[in-house]
Length: 422
Image 1: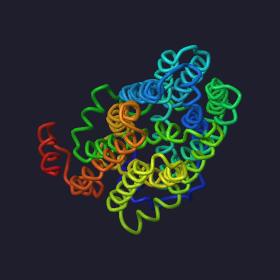
Image 2: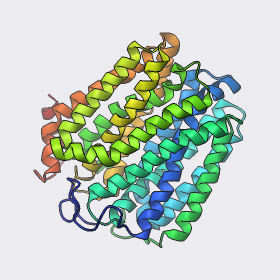
Image 3: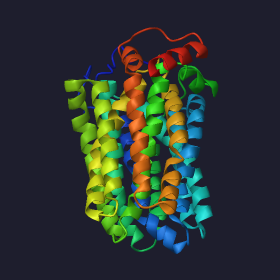
């Protein structure tokens, strides 16, 4: 696999071809990514409806996010193992099949506990698909790593943006509609991937379950993963708490709100993030955007009882999330001299398992304290992420610019990490 420091630059500059001149395999996987990421937005407009129909509390409904993310994070540890043995295409197809099955089962459920359980299976399928999709696009694309990641983030943004509208339309008929809708859309993605993605047999060495943990010996990768934990606590708090902070909004109104959020996410990830990165650099931009996201959540916390402020806050957050997603994902690919799937698995394991408790804790605070508490929780979490990235900036910058070789032991990695944070 090509090193990030050779033909694929980590600065986002093109080294060959243009952004749109991509192989058929890249577009096939990108299309499947659009459909896959619709699954996130499809569910959000119906959270209040699920709570009402299944007699569940907001914190119980938030476990739809927690079970999904926790299993997804743990499953990230095996994505490289599976892909290196059966090949990327079969791994993608396996993930899609799991999503189809478990989304359909969730729509057929009669209790919130069953929906939570089936969402966990959905998370397993999504882990196999998403991690492999990103590495497949990066490996098969023309141009730089930055261009490939922008294409991936564009698919993510388009899927997230359109998902709430489709979820709102289907959810107005029944809360089960969006779950069945995911199954149908995933079936389309399965067919497209089967016929348009060429066979991709296993290549390179077979990775092991230990490889992601070994990758975390590299301080820059570990730091970025820790930053992502705190960022995800705020990110998924927004997704879970947002609908409940809009008590007078119907399903379609919530759908339109998160549609605006998704549009800004897509636009900023594709066009704004690269420009800011060129002007100011990766780390200064990342630190500033995280700080602005924390401020946005803080404003929503102060004015949590004012629906117009919460609505604008949700939409504006899409801009910060879009920029952050592109910058962090690209930085992870160059943070450690390991295979990209291994780096992705290590990073995703930490950020998803660490951030999984966010929605439940946030909405439990909302139940026990008040409507302001979830957003304060998210704002404080993201602020901690700002402190971590600022304290570890020297280590991250050195890794991204081809600095010192990797530590020889976990003790040395931990020593360097503690030195930066302290």
